[in-house]
Each structure stands twice: as structure tokens, then as C-alpha cells.
Amino acid sequence: MISGGIGGLGGLGHLRHELFNKLDANQSGGIEETEFVEGLTSQNANLSEDTVKKVFAAFDSDSDGVLSEKEFKTGYQRLSSAVKGALIGLQEAPPPPPSPNELFANADSDSSGDLSEAEFVAGAPDGPHKPSEDELKQLFAALDTDGSGTVSEDEFKAGFRRHGPPPPPQAGNDNSDSNPLLALVQDSASTGVNQQDLNTLFTTLFKLQSNSVSTVSTSA
Image 1 (cartoon, rainbow, N blue to C red):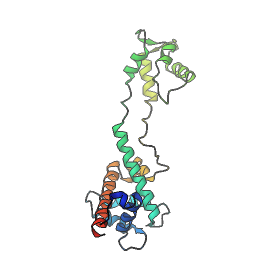
Image 2 (image 1 turned 90 degrees about the vertical axis):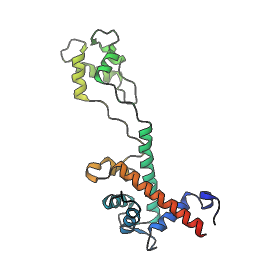
Image 3 (image 1 turned 180 degrees about the vertical axis):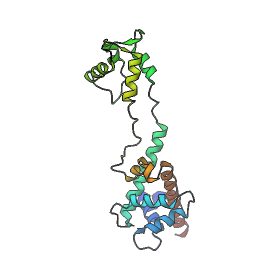
Image 4 (image 1 turned 180 degrees about the horizontal axis):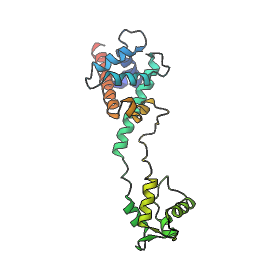
């Protein structure tokens, strides 16, 4: 029996190698799509064949229909990153943006019911995407549709509806350009693959990996 746990098995690289060999059912040195699909769907009834095929294509960087060990390890790392990024995003989700009413009330420092240019500039929420002072002044002028020199609450709300709130930040450090698995989720309306699908697939791979470790340990 091999002792030392994960360290005794040579670390993560060895674990990925054992998992690769387990999915390479015919031991050809590469994982074919049918092997990948069968190896995962047989372990988890919640995984659809279509989802697994699309993830296989995302792993298969050279599109030759076979996953090399390098492609498999890279794909596994990207899948892990996509799943962890989503969890971090849920755990550290930013609070919802303030409503137009809250923004206006916070900026209206003298409670006059109208915003001066100085109040509008000073009351702009801080953040990485905060406009410059000149940009805020230009926006103020655009909101002041009656040219009165102040922005009423109605003008402010109308402007908010036209421009809308800023887009929320994306979770995780990877983006769809560097991680094709994130691209699948971000375009889920057309791909049919959502974040839960990736979570389920990752869990299944991790279970298979754990089973591979147990097999090696008990047979050694």
C-alpha cells in the first residue's frame, strides 16, 4: 500500500494522470469523445450527453477529437477555475446598486429637491468606474434638460432610465477569451450549458479522481 496520502502519490500531477488513464478506457494514450462522455455520464445521471460533449470540445484545444494528457490537465484546471470563480462570486457578491431615489437623496446635500452641479459631482458614488469630474459635469448638463442650472428629481430619474446602472463586475479572474468554459456559461442561452452543469461535471471528475486514488492505494 502506498502511504503518505496525496503527497505519497506525487501530488496533483499524479492524480490528474491517474484520472486521465481511467477515462482513457482503451488505453490509447488519448481520451476520445465517446470515452469522455461515457466515463462521466455513467457516473452521474444529472449530466446530459450534450453538456459533456460541449465541455469535451472546450477541453479539446486543437479540435482533433482526442484529448491529450496536456489538454485534459489544462481543461481540468480551467474547469476548476470556473467553478471556484463562481463560488467566490457568490460568497463575495457586491451589494445591489443604490436605486435612483437613494442616489438622488444622497447627492441632494441641502435637501432642496434639486441638484446643483457641485452636489451632483460631489455625490457621485465612488468606485473603479467612477467618471472624471469633467465627465460628471457633461453628464449633469445632459440631465439638465430644461437648462435651469439644476437637475430635478424627475430629470435625474429620466436620465437614469436612459443610461441605466453600470454593469456588475464579473466573478473570478479568468475571462471568456482565456477560458472557453466560461464562454460556454456566458453564452448559455445558445450553448445550453449553465454554471450548475459545470459544477456537476467538476464534482463528477473529482469523485472519479478520488476513486482512482483509492484504487491505486488498495492495489499497490
